[in-house]
Amino acid sequence: MELLRFLLFLPSVTFGVIPGVEVFPWALLYSCFKLKRVPGALLIFIFVISTSALYTTASYAGEFIFETVRSFIAYLNPVILFSTVITATDLEIRKLTKVISSMFFILIVIGILQVTDIGREIGPSILGAFVPRASHYEAFGGLRGVNLLSSEPSRAATELLFIYAVFRIVCGYKDSIKVAFDFLIIVFILIVIRSAVGLVLAVVYFSLIYRLKIVIPLILIFIMAVFFQESSRVAWLIVELSQQANFEDILTLFNHQSGFRVVSIFASYHSAVYSIFGSGVGAWPVSSINAMDAFGVDPEVHAFFLADGAGHLFGVRPASFLANLCLDVGIVGVFVFIFSYGRVLKNYCNKSCVANPLIYFFIFCLFFYGDVGNPVPWVALALGVRAFRSDVFRAVVSHNQKFSVEQGKRRDSRF
Image 1: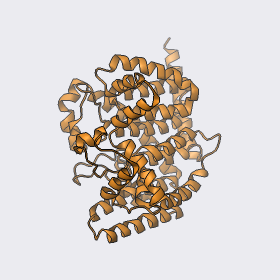
Image 2 (image 1 turned 180 degrees about the vertical axis):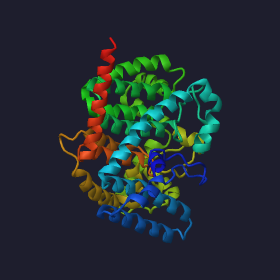
Image 3 (image 1 turned 90 degrees about the vertical axis):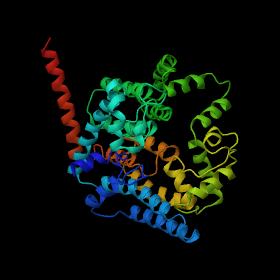
Image 4 (image 1 turned 90 degrees about the horizontal axis):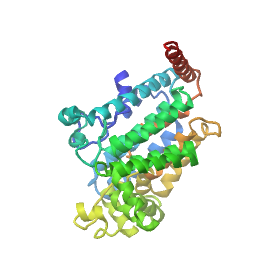
């Protein structure tokens, strides 16, 4: 079970067991052991996606049966984990908190190793055994960064941010130490992971914590980007964005550099307006093309479809959880989901809640970025909102604070 707790935060580690699957359902497996009671919100969600999946199967005579099953599991994987963790015992919360704190440092060490000469030599073969899709990653030899234990840099940066968000809540460190960690995380994403999406998400998250104070770190990021633009894709993109003449040009550049992400998300939201019940779970190979066409995406101009589709639209899964829901179950299904789980989250969200930045960051990612089946944001949210809501969780924070003070006293006694 301890190994399974670690694997919750490593969804891209599939060991190549199921070919073509990027996210292994460790969360679903964990929930089978730990979920004691099925909440009403989860039952409603399962009913909605099951009904939509049956509609797809009937409408397309089973043509997309594999995609329907895979999409159904992808939806269930993170949501059932959230329901499991949010209702878990205090003891289980404490165990998961220790795991996520350890995972944070493990990922940092792995990232540093991946950019060394040793990492370039043995990294692809070792990483490929755990994450087959990531076996081709680049280190400092190219513009793309490292993947840690994820399938791509953007996913690695997203997972690291959510893991760090929980670590930041429970570490018990002084504010000055937290500020230092915050800055190091931004530098790590800029120089090691080198993900433009990751950097944008980092700015969003830390803006929720620091608000206007984030301006100074942004200036430092730009200065660093000038020096690293030759070896970092994200640094190059920052410099390019700063050279655009107006906001429209910035949006155009960002749209083309983001691949299919931006257009797939907004096309899906647009589709929910004229298809209020959606096109069906698993029908995205067809429904996404229809959505982008109705949204006015020109494949002969858009860089991604020009390069990968020879100027033609092809089916892509929208790059956020809520955008997928809009495409599959429509605005009616989305409202049912938001109403059901919004009520659950409302019980933990208040002005004094230390997890508020994490909650708002999760909501942002729910709308604008994230893989459907990735459970890391969901388990991080569940752990974060349980902060200071149980005696056991407070004990973890108190222990970390005590340890930090004792370490400081030991250092002082040496001088």
